[in-house]
Amino acid sequence: MPQDRETRPRVVILGGGFGGLTAAQALRNAAVDVILIDRENHHCFQPLLYQVATAALTPADIAWPIRRVLGRQGNTQVLMAEVKGVDLDRRRVRTSARDFTYDVLVVATGATHTYFGHDDWAAHAPGLKRIEDATAIRRRILMAFERAEIAADPARRQALTTFAVVGGGPTGVEMAGAIADVARDALPPDFKNVDPAKARILLIEAGPRILPAFPERLSAVAEAALRRMGVEVRSGAAVTGIDREGVQLGDERIAAGAVIWAAGVQASPAANWLGAASDRAGRVLVEPDLTLPGHPEVFVIGDTAAIADPAGKPVPGVAPAAKQMGAYVGRRIAARLAGAKPTAPFRYRHQGDLATIGRKSAIVKLGGLTLTGFAGWTFWSLAHVYFLIGVRNRLAVAFSWLWDYVTYAPRSRLITNPARG
Image (cartoon, rainbow, N blue to C red; front, side):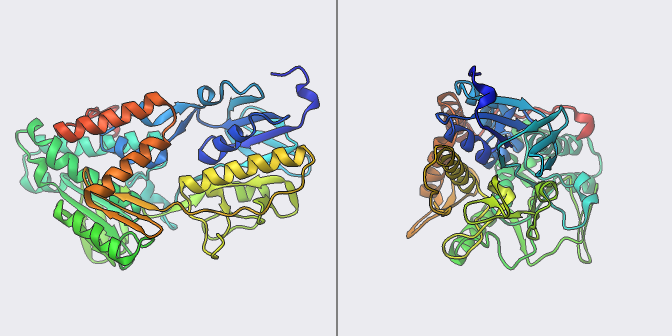
């Protein structure tokens, strides 16, 4: 660290996700000392977590040590600790390790799953936000087939090879398609007593259609593609119960070997730490420059922040939005400390909507450009490889996808800690 460390302003960034990491990188040349605090030691590329959950990729393909990403920034220190609270008056962050003072604070602590008041469902229907979630879901899916292979009762085998994905947004659509791929193409040669290709896969959406953020025509294209893959799409069906044996849809009971939750997210407890107003999802209501009302030294970004785009629509909780916020805040902090005039308010630039449907189909909406099928999948693949961190990971993921496409053989079908499956 620089010799004049104690005399320079200190910027503390909470969270090493897309927003926090981008903010730190934007401050690489600023005359500040940056401390980035995260409870994990790695940055995870969340858009591809579902591929870890379905054995297409390994955790190392989509996660990188934060210290390695920021290691060459001489003004930046990375610390692993869990945030416990923020003292705005004393400008102090409380963590599981110790307290840290700040001159400027950037809160980028992301979001987690929400079960809409049914937290007891979490034990039976894991969501997908962290590497641990992905490996737990992978274990449940693969263990369901292993138990079906041993089961003597045909009805029990059918129940075990039924998979319910709750939530028809991009994560749910991608997860359902990926499970269908691995069941139909990769697993059949590995089992003798059960046929994975006959697995029943349900995508359950409470709303009138899947992918509600997409135009209705593209939503219909995605649903048709899923049905061709054998996925049962159940729209207008609200889940009323989940337990270790399956799901309840009103009066209908569906026994399942694994249930995956993709129905909603809740912001981190940042609003409570800051004593701030929030929306229904717990996101902090921020000023147009992403600062906390009444506290211009505190910025809130990414999934933790609630702000509208120029059209008045809420900025979505997606990686491009978090990265844009991180870059904006980094520039604004550097300019403020350099005595420059304040920059314009944050303006989100929507870069399009993408969702993949299995191994050879996707839908893409970029302004007036629409792509579907294989053309959409090609664009989706190139876009995701481009946004990965590091040449090694780009090559590794690209090779994995190419190999899987040619061989129909995902390479990560490992069951770790089977007792928990």
